[in-house]
Length: 132
Image 1: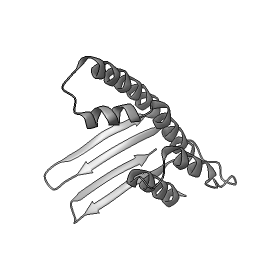
Image 2: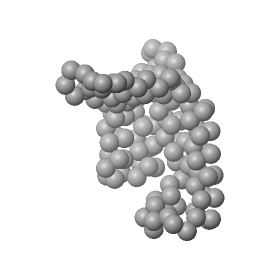
Image 3: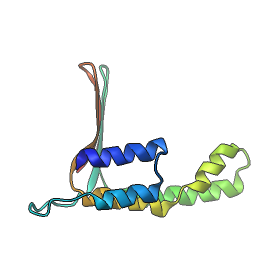
Image 4: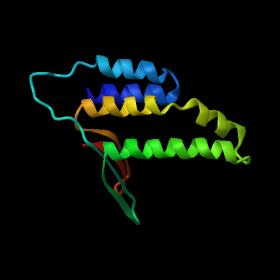
């Protein structure tokens, strides 16, 4: 299941599928109902490098959706009052829908805890994003 979600998100990132198709595919993933799995509630990010490490405390999904709302509110205000935005930035901000992003987070939450990103390079470099 974990690999299926990662594969769907990679396809979405590459532009192979649209967000609605990604949500539909995530909903179709067969969740094993024999084991009771608690819903995910937080996102944790860890970046470890040879010289430093950054460990961001687990962020609750409620706070993430609140920050998404604030970000979209500020971007809509900025688009109205700032003339210096690049046309590509304006087009990208206009094309993103906050409901779609919230829906993706909602589907991630339903699948319980798993490692979303786990990349290691060499002995001392690691990037890890975990759904808890």
